[in-house]
Image 1 (cartoon, rainbow, N blue to C red):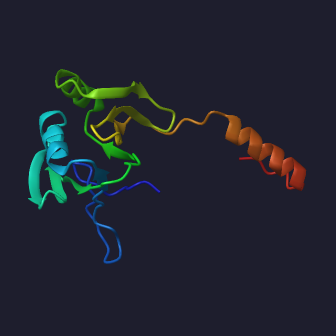
Image 2: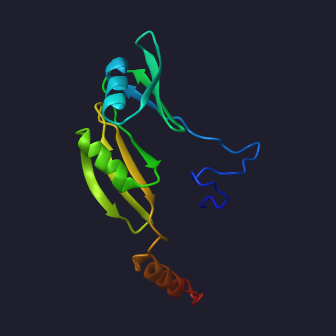
Image 3: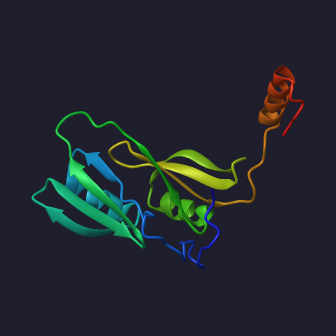
Length: 156
């Protein structure tokens, strides 16, 4: 379900007592201080704090990321980030020589997005809304086949 009540910055204007306010990813990293420097210099974040070289945080606007030192293997993850203009963010990241692992494109799920990989292998899919979700037609055809098999005759 999409957020319908949002302000000019894309933030919900109505929050119930049981609703999540925001999420802060905690990423395992090989070196917290080096990762903070990477996020500052390449991705444009600010360093928030550092605790004994083991735990730290960076932030940009309303986004904060916790960084936890991991002595074993790093298992990279991917985080989606919504921005106002993905093309402009991509241009800034290119200037800072960020590692772009997927070029920008308008996707059928209604997003214009690209993917960048940071210095520990974690990826960020960065995008903005680009219109309605466009069906491939395959889901509708599969629904029609299921309806025919069940005898309901109801399709999409």
